[in-house]
Amino acid sequence: MANQYKKIFVTVGTTRFDLLCETITTSPVLRALKKIGCEEINFQIGNSNFEPGDYVKEGVKIHSFRFKDSIQDDIKNADLVISHAGAGSCLETLEANKPLLVVVNEDLMDNHQLELAEQLQIDNHLYYCTCDTLENTLDIVDFSILTPFPKPDTTLFVKFLDDVFRVKQNIN
Image (cartoon, rainbow, N blue to C red):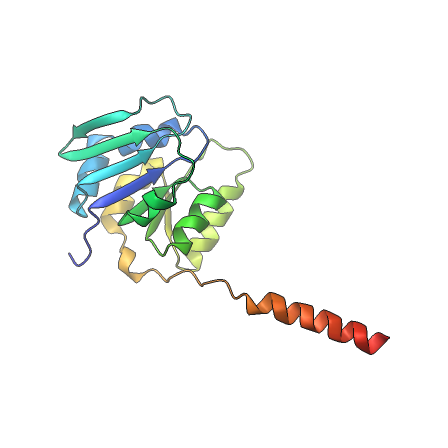
């Protein structure tokens, strides 16, 4: 296997996503993670009904915590990020140029998160799944073929302002 994802960061954001917390720590999912090289999981559990702490299961070291002021270092230090479908978590991970697997919370009503995950997968920036399909998804996806998320082009805003003021000058 070309890529080894030894350090995996999992985040549920600031919400409660008990099903993802439970699913990540099941033996079948941990075994699927080990197949792609996982040795340790840094796990931000948010408000989920899950106890923070450190333990080992299926040979994987798991460190879980509720919140931090910033998860930027957790993302930066990870070889792979598994995240809920929140826009902030997705964009922060993609901007850090980390491979991303989004797990959609199907319990959310009016699920705009699903729309975001679908579009970013169509654009080949990430993969998404549900808790039910997480194990199988880990077995079949190839994170190495994802397309890096484009860096923001700050010149577009400057060009926009130039165009606006140029039009305004021509009117006067």
